[in-house]
Length: 110
Image (tube, helix red, strand yellow):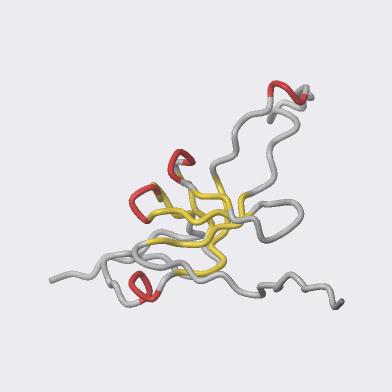
């Protein structure tokens, strides 16, 4: 009897006003160099956008692009069981609170 193989997924596409984020690694020491024990892990709420939904891609009011580093509220982030280390999360756009930029955006004068 042939054994059924589990389908492997290669791509996750967020739907609606959501982005797919790869969460940054949790911090293991403070900026001052003090090592933190595992139970005192500081929750990481930064990550890089892997994919954005089509709705966000075409929304000029949402300045997010693939590979942007963002700060997000983790409460409504949905973990994606896609990789062994499980660092992918689907995050609603309203939970993205900031995007990190190398330079300030230029303001157009009217």
